[in-house]
Amino acid sequence: MDDAEQTIAGARALSQALKDLHRALIRAEVGDDPVLNNPYTMLFALIDNPAYAWMGRLSRMIAGLDEQIVEGTIAADGAFQRARTEAAALIGEGDGAADPAFRLRHLTALHKEPEVGLATGRLRRLLKELPA
Image (cartoon, rainbow, N blue to C red; front, side, top):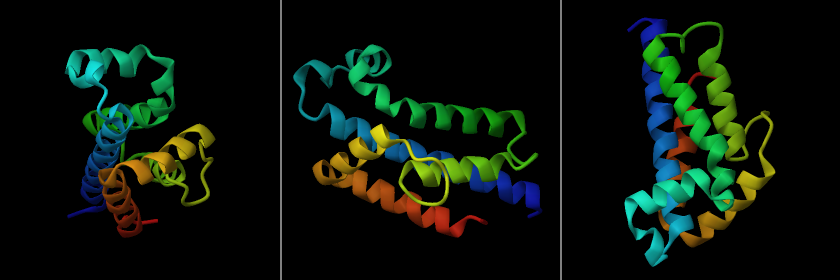
């Protein structure tokens, strides 16, 4: 496997780990709210409700990463390393700029929903395995 293929494989793994974290954070945030048990109601709440705006950075990160993978630009000009650095910063690791609103909600969700802890752990492990 050449460097470009390794980068694409790493980017796909990073995207999946971020999606797993995103899904776990949604579950933690929605909880047992009967109004949000309907997937369409939940989707519109996640899109429009300011209470969920803190997840926007993660959502945009996933969308951007997936777009770069599909377009084949993830292996060019350090795009993958920037994505890796941004993902690490999101969970409070590395030297990237942390998002205080996200960090606070993430830490709260870690105490509320075990799957958030598991998804965060998987993401941390993956970040350590990916080339720096």
